Image 1 (spheres, rainbow, N blue to C red):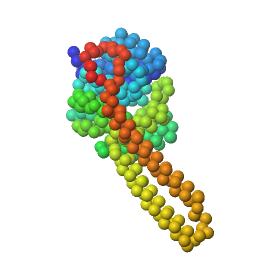
Image 2 (cartoon, helix red, strand yellow):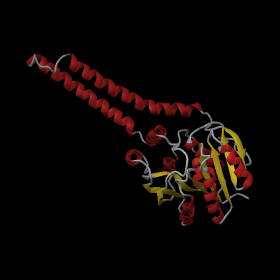
Image 3 (cartoon, rainbow, N blue to C red):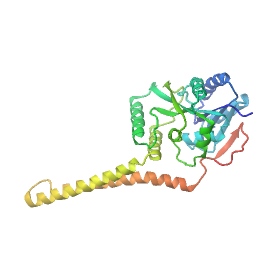
Image 4 (cartoon, one colour):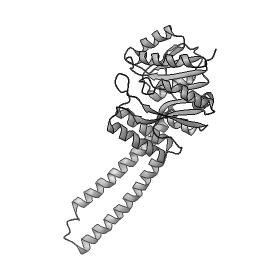
Length: 317
């Protein structure tokens, strides 16, 4: 019998949180009004995570797991879970328990009211440093201003998706996936549930500053062409500034021959300024070209090393 509810949880080196996560998820699953499957995706963990997933699968038939052949990243792990999910309602959440499983019944109630996407919106980030809060706050608002679609602020991947939405997401071929952006792009009836984000239950933070920055850049590049236009505008401004500087230097040479603003220093400043503009513009262009390169290679999004609890009918990944 196909499950009514599918819960997707990507896992990367989470051996310290898996058992507590399962305990809380099990309490939620017992309350649901239909058959449930818990899909745990091992994203190339180097600790004992995969062994714990096997044990949970042996203990509870509702637990299914996928083990990716290496670490492909959080967004690809979520995509793998979406490819294998069989439920009419699919919920995505993280294993660190910062996304409280106890919020799922409230999300299901919204689904029963006719909403096809229910996303969790953070009102507060408990025990997170000021730098993390500031950068996250700034990024979400910058993305909202620049993106071609309306991506809600302060939202992560914690959400409920109707089966119809999941089918549309699975049909999207793009490789540099930003799930919360794709979720907004596809449309359908959407609503928010607000919550206070808990601190991590145990273990180390997996989304380091470098990974968070890469995800932020991916979100901007995937849903906005404004950076390309900005580089064009900056280039035009640099050209105007260069013409004005040339006219000023000519003026000083003719009318103020002893001016300290003429000479080698002025030339160096102009060269460094124009060089910086060119490098920034090339870097922005490179981000877009790099994504074209990734798309045209046509490689699978991920490779599977082990599957537990599924009939392995999916071949296109």
